[in-house]
Length: 426
Ligand code: S3P
Image (cartoon, rainbow, N blue to C red):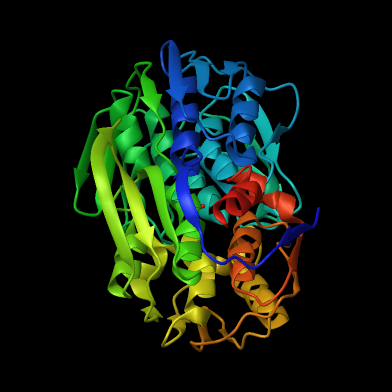
């Protein structure tokens, strides 16, 4: 569905975000294997997290979905049942990669796949460690979904992540929950730690030392009542919009500020953004706060190395800001962008060029000169939620009306995004 975006004179208002996508997936999967019912408030209504709930239901778990509160009736470590059909992860890489760790340990076989985009994403990164643990997994062409997972007894391993991936870390730790003995994941580059925090919330003891997380298998999980913080990766589009449109002033409530997720805030502040963090609280091991962002000119700069890994999901939004910044934006060490919901280096470049913005593409990133003007254009999300939302933000600063084709993909992580954006533009 095409969505029309008009230029904005200023953005103002107070925003409440959807529940964090990463945290929602983890709470749902852990609640399903806990000993009893868990209540989760502010669970993401995005299609990805609803896909995870669908897989839980297909595995025999009773799930009660309501807009504010989701109840998951956990059946314990041995409580999942063989699904009657192929599990559908939709567009969600997190669902298929993290759940594979649980499915590999079941006393039944299962298959899991998704939409065309998901079925083109690489799975060897989870197949290798799970094979080391004793799992047998078949994949299309040896590496793509759908996966057929032959559940079996798993053995603990020590696994060093070859790619900085929290999804792979989570897959191995979830598999380790079912193995007898201690499973360790070593991460040379730190990735988001929601899994560690969530496991501890559900009562699992972990040994966490610099760069290594170990879990003893067969620990029981206790059901919990938890609230999911607002999604900082969704906030990224509003933060960058406020920094693009002069005179903007937004308050964003209840944002998850986990330090392994909030690098964007540090980067924006170092580039000159006026962001205030108001009213910080702890919530289920996670840090949550309200943000106030006011328009401020942005210098631009370079994103590379560990910083790239820490804000990989925010790069589409940052790229847009980079084109309007004073010095432009250089992104390196971002080859992972090529295997997200789309090849994001390609889809960012395509939309930039449609708007008349120059961009030089590299295998692992891009260079965008600063002080460029966005021209109104027909844009495309290419079915990728973050690409559609990032270019809707760019379109706010264009000289006329732009259109985003395939805009409905925003509902993967941020249902209602376009209406919200319009309601802030006044
Ligand atoms: C996620 C981890 C990241 C991120 C994805 C969600 C997670 O992927 O891009 O949107 O919830 O663990 P990788 O772990 O593959 O880097």
